Image 1 (cartoon, rainbow, N blue to C red):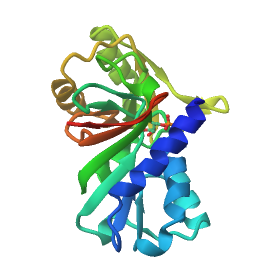
Image 2 (image 1 turned 180 degrees about the horizontal axis):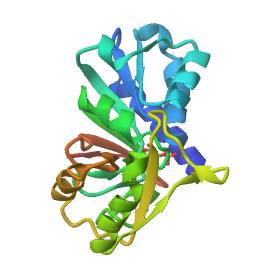
Image 3 (image 1 turned 180 degrees about the vertical axis):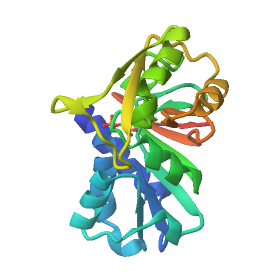
Length: 223
Ligand code: DER
């Protein structure tokens, strides 16, 4: 099975967590795109979606799925999203798709985070994937120095040669060289640095379930 086929498998498997008649929380990325395509096949059974990025909004709307703003709904039953890394407790590194801020917001208003991922995302300890951190541009260099002080190396994410600008108008640092032994403590610490909008560690908003695409089929991991 190719990685793309594994993504399709888990994207389809996530349909079983969608509650009929409700609004579903939708993340961002290539695996989520497979889920959105699967969701479109049952779009008459749901009320719509809350989206975590302009990219996902565009795909949902193109498939005829109504998109609601986060402020229009109290609680969502389920949030379906991918991850760049997920550990044995359901903590994740996210932000490869530059949508980490809105992803964490929609995850926070959802009762169950269902992570859909191919087996390459499962790690013992978070930190091998460059950690995305959304920052207010004027704070970028000071935050980079703070990561350097803990052994990290932060680079500004570029797009077409200029700093990438997120849906929220901010910049992203990608940080290598970190060993995140305690995801909750790390997320709490970095959240406090002035100028940090969102750190791509999802420990407070960790997954409750991970649908892992493996060559032996879809494994359901619960945390
Ligand atoms: O940006 C994100 O957080 C995405 O969910 C990312 O982590 C996973 O994207 P992928 O499914 O394309 O690997």
